[in-house]
Image (cartoon, helix red, strand yellow):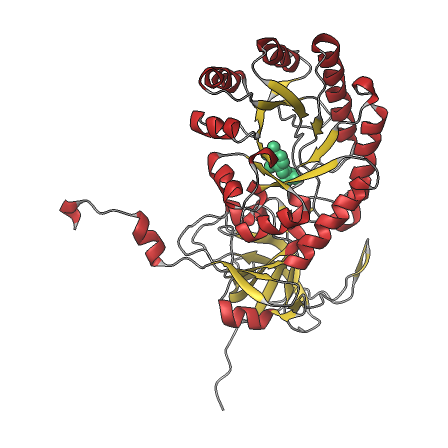
Length: 448
Ligand SMILES: *Cc1c(COP(=O)(O)O)cnc(C)c1O
């Protein structure tokens, strides 16, 4: 008989079925499959940790968002926000569903071109567009959303050497009641800068102003902000028509819809509180219908929804590395996925599940990632069942901003797989290995 492992006894309150103010605590049900595929088999084949993306969920989410808007407004166009998740396979699913591309850098612009998106269906946002980027975008008839006067000047300069009329919109920032106000992007509405930019564009006669753009912020949990934003853009559209007889052909309200991840410190889970696509669509399309645009025309409504479109489709599965007791006796669990893969864990209380049935007992636990870095915390305080070393877990709703903001610190970035509609699993981004890094590095001769 082998000797049992000794753990020094301590007294802790074990929580089992005691009600809190929201009712009885529910036993955490395991999640063992995604779209009918065993998570265990995915880890066995593709390693741990591993990101898993559900193609079905992407399509279902896109379709319900589209339906919410298209049933309420005659002209609706979504553009996929590349920075939220720019894996080519993911982008292509959105493009197949009908989304244009929304990019914020030369790198993302090139990706959109490589994903076969025609230039006139690429929206080019952001403060960082090089002269070369702008030249390409003008030649491809892309929709350039101007961020600042320096960019406008560069476009006017380029206009002299190119015989293409640039197709532009301006990004407008404004007070919509959201704090903090994002006033660092685009031209301000209240102080007249946006109107000033419109005047400079249209009085030049060298550039077509075809749209107005606003992106209020991210995780905007009240749809009211969009109503205010649309009223202010409609005012600019009307002034533009009165002064220049130019009709704005689209209003782009950006992204910002909340996903169902709960923010740290929130009183209630986001699954109960965050507005649905129908809530946002109702507010936005009502504001579009109520605002009177020039000649009573309806401009196309463009949406650049990122987070709310992809969060639900992404999962991160992994393995428990160790359990330990902290100095005060609190339970801690170390897992093989940290903030290197989920930068977003700084803001969200991610939902994490075991893959298999556990005991009824759970205990307040701090979940740490694997990094040698004190801030590598995935959950500060979660009532969690007792998993052992080598047990596996899966984290829910990690599709947004994880696979683009991840960092290569200490270890390689893992495989990303996609489950298709036929339950086939495809690697869509390979795990890195030392060759990836060897290729990028150079050793000076005297150190060889
Ligand atoms: C990041 C970004 C988006 C997407 O925002 P979400 O909050 O993820 O919906 C859309 N438009 C612009 C200009 C952005 O910078």
